[in-house]
Length: 312
Image (cartoon, rainbow, N blue to C red; front, side, top):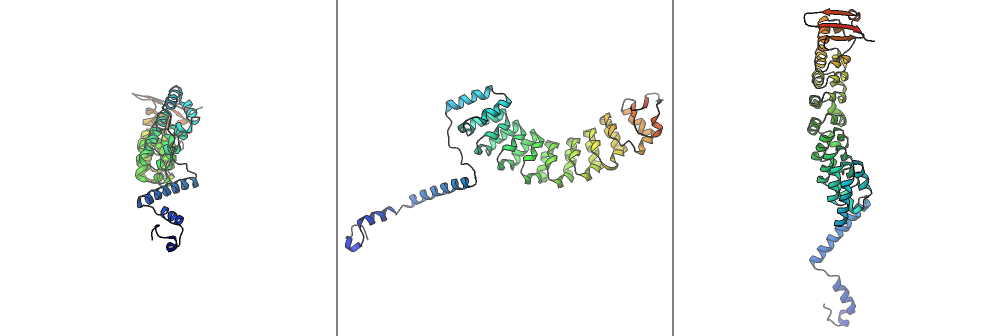
């Protein structure tokens, strides 16, 4: 029934016909309205969870130029305060943030939230300072490329990585190959894994972060002391009294003699003591070693003079 029908026949006032017509929309109009509702729902969800919607402000070119000039004149620390005090439009400007984090990666802390989730921005930040990962969005802390870049710059930034990456053996192997410090923050089971051997091959100091059983593993300890003699101090069990480990460590760094078990029977082995003295340029200070060594004694051989004396 159209609006041209008489009032009596229609039983409605023409005004009602106009209202009815206004409620009928084309499919295109309905689709547009649905998109609007989705946008409203999305913004509502972000508001409910405390997340801010993406910044819509556009930075005036003159304001960008002014900020760039200030940034150029700022030192490393001043860069932080400059961005912290900047207007939101600056903090939401990708160009300004990229320039800032390239000078001080930690400045990403003051960037607008959408830029903390911007991979290019975060990669630039961690390339300058690995610890900038702390202020990146969660999706960036779970990004293998981003975390590996951060660890390459600063191994300790591994502590800011997503938990699942700390338990991922392949990723941990890659991370510890970049920095042994990453081993300090990986899941406990991996500290008792072959991961430690790989890390020790990179730096003997990795032994410090290894789980107990591996600090008494001869292969791991020998690998570690070959890289860093002082890691013998982190060995446990009988390995501080192991001749091969001792010679390997002292050959690499003669000061490692201080980490050899001073009560070990091997200090009563003349051949071993002579080898230690030879590695130390012919001089070996004796503290609490075998009784026969404690008295001041000088041995003369065709090639080397060995001096043994009690340390004061």
